[in-house]
Image (cartoon, rainbow, N blue to C red; front, top):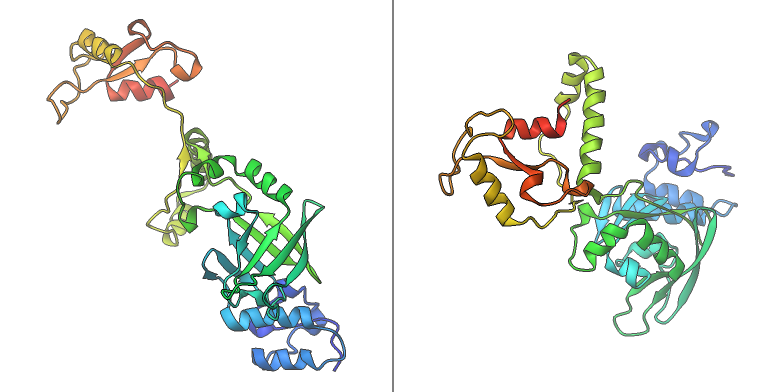
Length: 309
């Protein structure tokens, strides 16, 4: 049997193996093991595909092992941690070496790889420690780590100080494109954005939602996740002068200095009238933190000053 392409339609691998229409279904009634054996004894060289099938046979799709995840037989994802930036690499979990075709690597041996990112080649290697532990690791060119630090500058500044859970980490994808060459890509959007950027993103999404009718919104709500995921955002705060705050609040004497209404409620902490201190010229725009540049306003007027016409 001579195969021009590889099909494992039973498992939905069309996109992974770029299957041509004429060959879809040839393994429809076979198990993974039977498909692997058929390819192994074919006259053509299907070792690359066989290794991908072995990965799926062992783990299946979307399985996580430490900071690695099997996306498909052809694609693996690495959650970027501190070692990815500072040590230019990562440990490879036991058993995952099949994906990189180094399952037979012996202690002290190195295997060279090529990582292709934005049409540029970066040298990499997989090494198995000569020690009794025999840990398998991948290391890439230092220049690639420099690019990572630039791309995820804010994220890198955070993980230098503390660890970040997997769900908050950007991903580095490895896609096999033949031999020992892998196409590298990264999470497209920066996970760590400013609060202002996030608010603008939400505002844009709300505008899109408004452009739809109620029926479409309710349809989406039926399948929506009720518990939103959390995310980390970066924001800049200014050290406020407490004397300015107290002086402005005492000047207002419990009344909004914009609309003249009485404070809407009293603070639970000290029973004082609740008003908020607003800077006429925002601190972010060069305004001064002075009594002359600040007024005490009720929450409603404060929102109007920031978001009203």
